[in-house]
Image (cartoon, rainbow, N blue to C red; front, top):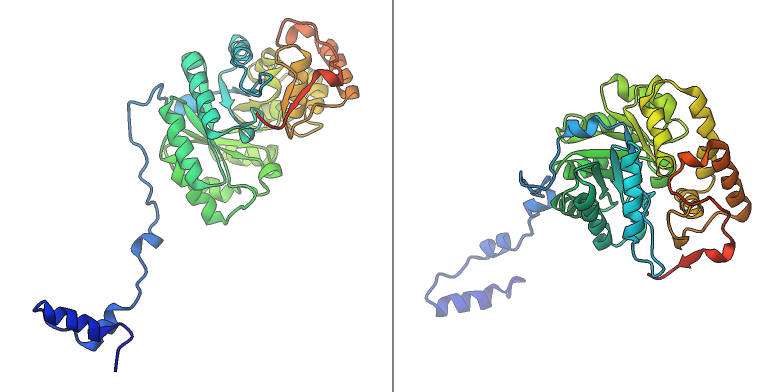
Length: 364
């Protein structure tokens, strides 16, 4: 009787070669499937280990930052980066006391970039400004594989630290969150970014406390409010507020190190005063109308509109972002006049742009 594994034909071949035939039970044993060890091996990824990385910085250098700007990415009419406008905006940040920038974050529209664009902009920022300001590249992804690859590339082109968000949309378990962050932390100083309103999933303190012993963990950009910030600060975890409207109280009342700010694109000098000048409730109150206006629609819609009306960037939007309506554009001009045009970036007069002055790009 023929065996399912083809024993007769195998034995005929072995005999013709002068080899010993196989017994049926041996054939059956060897036909059983076994799970490969690699399928359950953790930490299979071998990260870069180079001390020759350009502009390498320490975790402590990142922890001491107080004002970090989530920098805007300007565009040319064909949708490419407007590097001239970008460099001018960077110089304004440096001149007004910003200590670090997030490149290609939510504010910089990293989600609308190809990875080539993303890494190029990080490299350009390091090359032009890396000796004057800390460059933190947003290299996060909801794919661990992509996050690892982008982090390697970011550090290879010289970024000083990485910003990593938790896996969004698909989400994952708490153990999955921990392993995702562990996979990227091995490569250099890293800030974890928690913004459940965008990702759909909170990074709870239990996960952060598991990550905390890693020597490359710099801290958390936290958007869940001041009570969460105080809880971390009490445990010695470095925290930056992710909310401009709460950052003054976070800094001076709840133990935050500082802020990762959208508004500092517009008023870097005033945000510097808010982070370095001690308690200043009058200045904080003065800026509240600007903060409220900026986030009335999802960021960076307000910022893009504001910078265009200040003449700092061209009024060009990559879709799906769309400028604020006329009444909001008029309101912004009033806010600028109330705070003082001299406190805002740029040298042109602020003006209300008309609808037909904006360009909307769906392909670029």
